Length: 300
Length: 239
Image 1 (cartoon, rainbow over the protein chains, first blue to last red):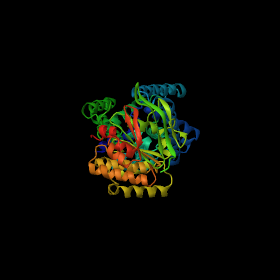
Image 2 (tube, rainbow over the protein chains, first blue to last red):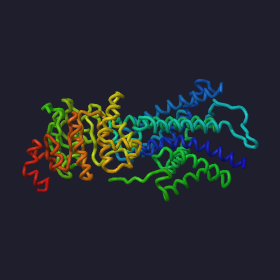
Image 3 (cartoon, each protein chain N blue to C red):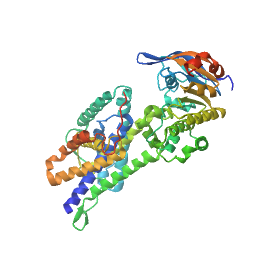
Image 4 (cartoon, rainbow over the protein chains, first blue to last red):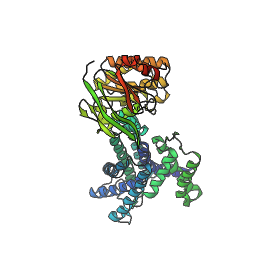
């Protein structure tokens, strides 16, 4: 039982990081019908931005909730700006081009970020400073919790709740949903669709950046290729939930996190990475719309 | 109704690839009138409206709104200039509620008292929408969806309203009700450019009419005269 709960906590903690990344995939797909394969690398950049910000402010010397929130906020802002630049220079010029062009561009941007990262940051791993620490372990009876994992989970949930509020309760969110329904129709309302698309990129990138910092707390080893696998897994999570659907991305990511953890714990540790892709293949074969997706017909 | 020209469509052509959907057409919209653009499927009516709203680029010619060239602007910048379009085929956001649709219609309206008055006015014109304000727009009937399209375009507080086939696919009684409302909106001071296949009913509420055929203007004049003309009666009224 103790072991089971430990796996549950591990799964939710890693799943919530996948969720932060998956949300960006799904939102960008919503407004642009583009799978932005560079998105996992924004998460990697988030970890490095967080690393440099923490070092710059010497946050590792006074680990506290304040240090963590400061690093998180600044990282989210810089990631949002990076997302804005990528959208403006790489994707906006392709708005009228066939969709495959943007897709290939996103693969290019991904490689660009990964290898520029190796050039600039060096390819050897860095150690993310400990900017938040809770002494000891939390325990209920025999159950021991890693407080950092709980922190990661709570912060992720808070960010997701804020996102839900923005998307479903604000005018800007309403505009995002309008743009994802139909660009032309949204522009007939007077909505500046390009600005809404940029905003969506910024929002998604900020969340991925937050994921980068949070993962640095729990697994402090960061390196320029660290975004590849979580990026692909978050993509699988978004597809599992029904790509374009915000709630689906969260459910898909938490499910994937849990599934991985239980497979590793009870079946075979070496199957961790294979699982995500098995799920992807099964979803595409049997329920291509995902758990929450709705069927749309493509008009030609 | 004055003769002040508020919108000038000047010798425009619009192409889809190599196909010319609209060929060198010109017309003026006068302040305060209802002008009908009638013609059968594929005549270029919707294309013309899309060109005015800048959803389609012009191959040649220009469009002037209050003497300002607007065909080079982005669609959302035109709405800001108080020209609003209710698109065809009940173009509403099916994934949003009735209220959210109306709210987005007022995207360019920053003044809350104007917003409140417009919302009240929209609900006065279409009481049905008030009852369904919390409902998802996808659950509305065809007639209600069309009402929402018009109500939403009014939320932009327009001086000029472009209506694309408001009668499409609706039952005769509902068409009647919608045309009455269009007339009412016009009497309250909004200039209307109405695109219709339903020539008889459109001309009955219009001041002037233009007949389009395969991208060309073939006939234009006062609605009264058009209703009497033999060509119209034969071609569009089935006599």
